[in-house]
Image (tube, rainbow, N blue to C red; front, side, top):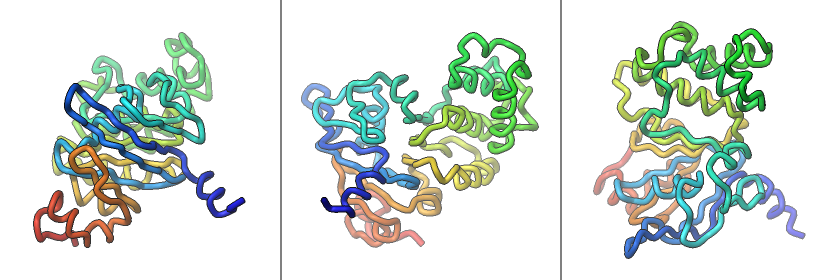
Length: 260
């Protein structure tokens, strides 16, 4: 037995092999394979139309692949529904907020934590009813800089705070793999720094796949990258390798450009 290969396999928390998705005569993902290692900070980049969103929808179960397999923590999850994948530790945030505007951050997190703990309707009880829920909510509100707005209706929150709440909801599900879909998209410049710091401080034991167009965030956050073009993987490697790759500069960073 190859012990090195065995250890490498044990460190792979999420993988896909030969993922293909066709919509009629259009191939949105073309034989895509990817491996996300334990504790990774991995960025998925590429120009518009590269197939990034389709790939994420395949990984999370929103779309069914035409061909290929997906494994999470060694289990084939290719046929599981999205909520079943969440229960197994694969959680996603969305490019566009998916929040309950009428609830406060505290209420939203209490409901999420209660459901994750299997308490069901207990989510409707007062927050202090279960100390596990109260403690977890307090920790999340603090971690994501939401304590000062925890009792405000979500619809009144600044956009950056809404993005932070969305990440807090994802972490409340205790994921082993977190898919961050353009976390700073639409966030005003004045609110970005807090969000960037929070993304950088995500728990080390959570493996993160980041889909992002903001190159400052990508290069400050990622320790590995995959570049997609026209539905296929162009190349992958470290941020330094991607910045130096002429193919990447031509198709994404700008012809002849570079990133400092």
